[in-house]
Each structure stands twice: as C-alpha cells, then as structure tokens.
View (cartoon, rainbow, N blue to C red):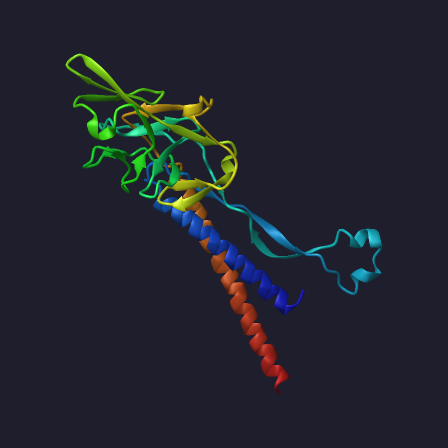
Amino acid sequence: MNVNDILSISRTGLNGLQNNLDIVSNNIANSNTVGFKQRDTSFGDLLENSTTPQDANLEAAQQNNLGMTMGLETHQQAINFSQGGLRSTDSPYDLAISGNGFFGVRGADGQLYLTRNGDFSRDANGNLVNQAGQRLDIQATVPENQWPQGTVSIDQNGQISIGNNGRTTQVGRVILYQPAEPQNLQAVGNNLYQLQGGALNSSLTGAAGLGTIEQNHLENSTTDLADAMTDMIMTQRAYSLNSKVLQSTDDMLGTINEFSNQ
C-alpha cells in the first residue's frame, strides 16, 4: 500500500461517512414528522483486485482470491417501511394506516404521489387536502364541495359518511394504494413517494394486504431518536478519525517532498 492508496481510502471513507451523516441528520430532523419512514444505510469495503510483484510468485489458485481493501463504499440506502406507532387526535380528518398501504395525493397537475402522512383537512373549496394543498385521492359519490354539514365518519375500509339529525349520507371512499414491489418507490421530498416501475395495487380493485384506516389517528415517524443520535455521534467520530488520517498523510507527503527537493 502506498501513500496514494491511503489518500484514496481516507477520501472514500469521508465521502461515505458524510453521506451517512446526511441521512441520519434527515432522520433526526423528521423524528416528529407524521408518517415519516427513516432511511437506513449500509457500508462495505471497496476491494482492489490487483496484485503486487510478490503476489506474482504465489500459486495461481491463491492469486484469484487476493484483494486489498481500498476504502469505504456506501451501499444503496433503503427506506424502512416498518409500521409507526399511532397516536390519537381530535380531528376527524386525521387518518392513519395500520398495515402496508399508502394514501394517494394529487397536485394541480394530477400527478399521483403516495404518502403515509394522513394529516388532512378541508380547504376553502371543501376538498380534503394535505398540508401542501394536494388533494387526497378519494372515490367520491358526492362532490366534496357538496358534502352536507354533519359529523364525518371514516371507517376502516375508507368509507366516508356524514351524519346529521339521524340521517347518514355516504359521500365517498378513501383509496389506499400499495406497490407490488415497494423497493421501486422513490422518495421525492415532502414525505411523498413516486413509483418508478411495477404494478400499483389499490383498494378500488379489491387488493388485499393494504391495511385499515384509523380515523382520529396519525402515524408517528419511525425514527428512533436515541438510535439516530448514537449513530450520528459514532459517524462523527469516525469522520474525525478519517480526517486526521488524511491530514497526517498530507503532512507526510509534504515532508517527503521537502527531502526530495534537497
């Protein structure tokens, strides 16, 4: 291993650790975000499948398995879609999913996004929207701006009914979605996901395994704050150690250059 190898190892180590710090920081920042799913990362060694002149004297069978660790590689980060805890609220438009499904929301362009954030409300036009103003995807039997006054009930299957003076009116149904391959979901910000390929199942087609809707509840973030803070401290320490190695290597190179110029 030469000096350039040490520099390369330190550089890849710093890059990988910085990436992990960014992810952990984002998890911590969203520890109180409704329906947030934490990101997990894993690391592996970068291997250089090269041999030294000394290796050339070894048996060919031995050479096939030779390798040198050349740094740290950040593996593909994964979204942890485990179920978050549910907390009760006073709003009839606060919804949580117990199970694997997702709510669908649409922006002004009609593009469908998936989310676990069930913090909804009625806007000035009577539409059920999230905090960004995107409309909750529902199968309406009565247009949202024509819903009668009364007590709103949303059952576990998503059926929306409004009761008033002993009369109940069915006005629609909340649609749940679930991708056939959850790994094809890509986070696009604001606690939203887009499907990058594969089939998308929905409660409209009678798909099973979507879960149930819990009215007057919100799903907590899956970030474990204690674990995330511990991970951040350990990553920061590793980053500091890698920085010191890089600085020491740079100092050593400077000393070598001074001697070679004499």
